[in-house]
Length: 455
Ligand SMILES: NC(=O)c1ccc[n+]([C@@H]2O[C@H](COP(=O)([O-])OP(=O)(O)OC[C@H]3O[C@@H](n4cnc5c(N)ncnc54)[C@H](O)[C@@H]3O)[C@@H](O)[C@H]2O)c1
Image 1 (tube, rainbow, N blue to C red):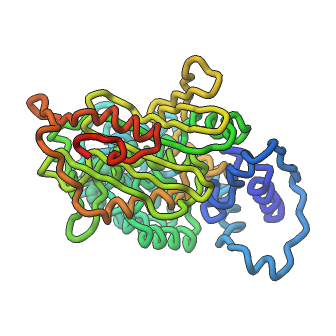
Image 2 (image 1 turned 30 degrees about the vertical axis):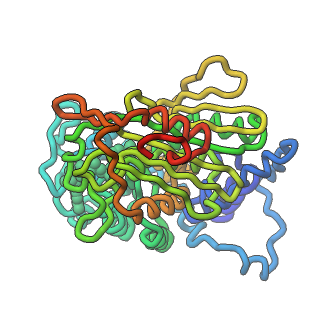
C-alpha cells in the first residue's frame, strides 16, 4: 500500500496538478500552494503549454547530489498514509466559543446533525453563550485547552481565540495529535510563523488558516482565467475596501483597537483584522509569490481612543513582478465590500471577494459563484488527500505584511475638520475615504500620492 500511496502523491504533486482540489494530496510541508507550484509568469509568458501528465509512473530518480539540494518535506509518506486512510467521522473541538467562535458553531451544527462530524468539546475561558440555533446541548464544555484535549481526543481543533493565543493553543493541539483550523491571522510575525511551521512539520499535523475567501470558486475562476492567458501578462492587483464601524466596535473585546497587550502585539486594526482577507486575497490573486522587498505603508486613525489604523494602504511588488496595492477604510461614506482589480496587458478582471462575484474580460455582468468551506476542505484533506486550500505555507507572505503593519508606530490621527461623527453609537466618516481607497487600488497609489487633504 505504501508504494501505491507514494505514486499517488507523486502524481498529485507533479506537474499534472492544475488547481484545487486536485492540486496536491500531500500535507502542508510539500505545499498545496506556495513555492512548489508553477509560478504564474511561466503561464503568462507565451502560449500556454499543457503540462505533460505522467499517470502514476515513477520518474527517473534524482541523483544523490540533486536530492541533497532539494528541500525535503518531513514525514511525507507515513503521514499521508495515515491521513488518506483516515475515513473515521472527524472528532472536532472548538477553542473560543463566543465571538467568531459563534460562526464556527453555526457552521458545525448542520454537519453534526447530519452525522458528518462529532462535536466533542468546546473550550472558552468565559461563559459560553447559549443560542437556540446552536445549542450547547450535551457537548462537553471546558475552560482549559489541555484538559479538553485529554478528555476529548479530537482529530481537528478549531481555534477562534484572540491572535496572541494562537501559537500556544495550536502547539498544544498539534502535539496532542490533532489537525488545526486556525483563525486568521495565524500569528503576528515571521518568528512565530517559523515556530508554528516547525511544530507542524515535527508533528506531521495539518494547519488550515481561516482565510475563507480563498475557498471562493470566483477566485478559482479568476486564477484559471489568468493561467489561460485571458488577461495577458498580469501587471497589478489592487484591493479596495470601505466599511463602517461604530465606536462600540472598539469595546467588543479587551484587545479591540489595541496595539499590544502585556507587551505582545494583538493584531487589531483595519489591515490586521477585518481586512486581513483583503491582503491575503491580493497576494494570492497576484500569484502567491513572496514579496520582492519591503512594503510601503500609510496608516491613519480617525478616533483618538484607538491605537490602530482604521484607514490604511500598503503597496509592494512580488517576485513575479506584479504590483500589489491594498487600500482600506472603516470610515467610508459608501460601502465597498472588498473589490479586487486585476490588471493585465490584455484585459482586466474585477472580483468582489466577500461576495464571490467576478467579472472577467468580455463579461457584461459579474457572475456569482459558490464557495468551498475550509473546514470541509480540511476534512477531505484528511479523508481523501484533497489539497488544502489555505494551508499555513500560503499565509507566510501575509504574515510578513502583518509584521510590518504591527511594527509600524501609532497611526497618524486625522484632523477633526475632515471627519463627521454620525449616530448615537457614532460611526466616523472620513471625507472621501471611499473614493480614495478605490483610486488607490485602481491606480496603484498611496494616499499621499492622491492629493488628499487628510493624507
Ligand atoms: N475569518 C474571519 O472572517 C474572522 C472574523 C472575525 C474574527 N476572526 C478571528 O477569530 C479570532 C477570534 O476573534 P474574536 O473577535 O471572536 O475574539 P474574542 O476576543 O471575542 O474571543 C473569542 C473567544 O475566545 C475566548 N478566549 C480567549 N482566550 C482564550 C483561551 N486562552 N482559551 C479559550 N478561550 C479563550 C474568549 O473568551 C472569547 O469567547 C481572531 O483570530 C480573529 O481575527 C476571523
